[in-house]
Image (cartoon, rainbow, N blue to C red; front, side):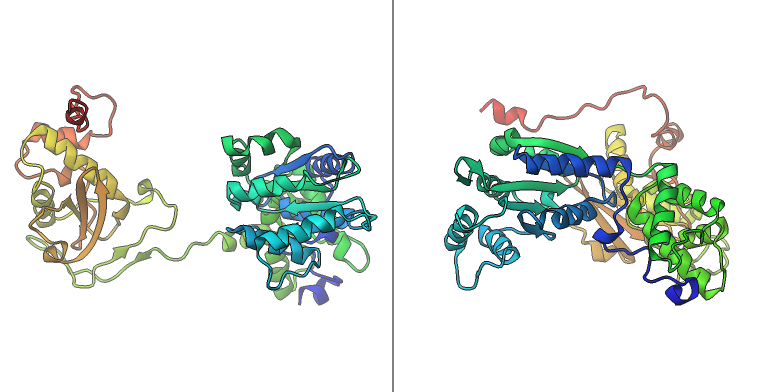
Length: 434
């Protein structure tokens, strides 16, 4: 639909990287030239580091296509390998070396012989490993050992590792000192700037258009693309592809900022996390409807994203008794119960009252009824129980036996300044004296 309506030869924005769509931005092109020089001059190992979506996989494909004319190339696009046999088998298959029925020693020997063979008139092996941060240190060291293969004093294997910033942490491991010392080039990718983002979109459209014109997006749309994606190439592809699809369905010949904003809004939609149900009217102690609304926090959401409210009086008293089961009346135990509230606060929702407390040894969780959540705080099991109603504030969760002054201190638990310090018992001190 998109291709026929906009007269494209192919989709201009794809989720999967494609070497033919390489855009020579300033940073990525500099990285390509540096890694090319590292391989051609046999300088050592090249490392490519970048955040997710900045074009590491695409650059690996470009380098692989570039070196195929002069070297034997093995591109490991999926490096989620855990054993030496799986590693050598993947490299052997990439080089068309028979691997069936061979163990890891036989695979390694066959690979070494192939690299050092005098019949090989190429410049040697270029091994490009994408997502290299997923490899265990022992496999990274095995890859480094390939660079020791020589013929007439010249190295026959050249290694390029690409991965997230965690790859640098792996290379700095003491067990990988030999690998770290052999790194001759470190390249760092980043997102595109405003002008490069607009140039990238135009270049992809021009490459896909039958007439070579890339004016499907107006200037406001290009600016909206940069504002929405912050120049991350993967996000640019996603929002532009969806905007083109929606524009084709609505027969819009030229996209404006509105189409980009609508596409980005649809991409960023989360599944509904709040399920509202009818509640009974509250009179006296306010009985709750059986089907009270529940809350499921979205992945990555913080506790501050949940709105706050006040529970009905009956629910407040129940929460105070539950939170005070283990806490007692001492101020130190009240502070311990407050930490339990903090740990379980992620379960709080708008239309459900969450009862917090610590689980005693002789009280099973199921005995309390309702939807129950648990988490561990120190040596206590924190229980959050959904009993219907509104959301309780920190002050409402204080035990009923706490006086007004202490209840006020609960409400300002996260405020500025503390007048007292809570002593912490060192459980290991007794062991040290033995």
